Image 1 (tube, rainbow, N blue to C red):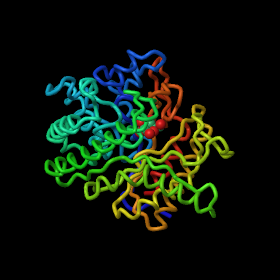
Image 2 (cartoon, rainbow, N blue to C red):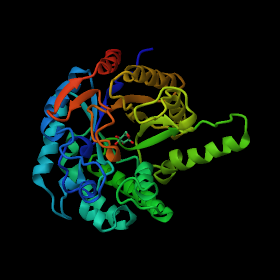
Image 3 (cartoon, rainbow, N blue to C red):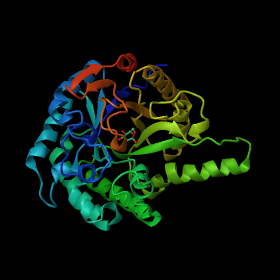
Length: 380
Ligand code: BGC
């Protein structure tokens, strides 16, 4: 089967994970002030090497690229917009245009300006108001260079890691806070959806939703089925209800199934995540009900020796094709990630890149599996 016409292939990154020296963000502050956490430092130095990185992506056949704009660079202090940072992102987007690579631009990918965090971050309505101001500014300044807007990356992951699982700043454990954060993120998305459409009505707007493939452990048992239904509703579907009517496409980030990882005997990533490609078909079918085009905005594996990534790519793309064959409107696949990068609380050890980064020299080396993805790009 050929891919649908204009099917996009490429890779994704996020600012804090690749750029380096994001000194005004809450993550940076947390990295400096908390003992025992990894420091992002220069990350992959993508801030200075984006041209080289996009040239590599181009050589690998990529026709789309997802990146994020770092709010804390654009607005290092409330109401103070940094022209230099803005011009940098203009150059980045111009470079993608020049290479004929479509851009997916994320406006919030886990990090916040430190000044916002100090005022209570996403637990407050203040975050919604400030996000509106930042988004209006960025869309007015850069919108004409953007092909797709991704407002917020993985709202449920952000809320649970930061306000329930105590893994990420501000490391809180409060159900009330987590619920408040989810509510504010949904509100912020709805509100900036309107703003973005007002400024550039033709640019599609969506969010990137982490989806877990929930499969009942005992297919025939009612309690097992019910349990899976509740989890699927809470984690996968609820954010769509909260944002109904305010997205033009669906961004799907898929990594693993929601099963007991300890008893999983199949292949695993370096992080111990089960590899389960059929789960991608499963979650894509679950998105059919929303009747919107779908882009895979992330899918990848931590695999330092590149021994499993080639199969991972082949099998997950097959899973996408299966979903398409079953009537799901999937229009693109972006691999996570273009480059090795700062994997949040796990630091630099997990290697997700199609391109390996030697952090001592910042030298880039294309991994063999990157050519497996390239071969698919030749069939569009
Ligand atoms: C996030 C990325 C992260 C990736 C791998 C996704 O949840 O959007 O920032 O690096 O998963 O863990």
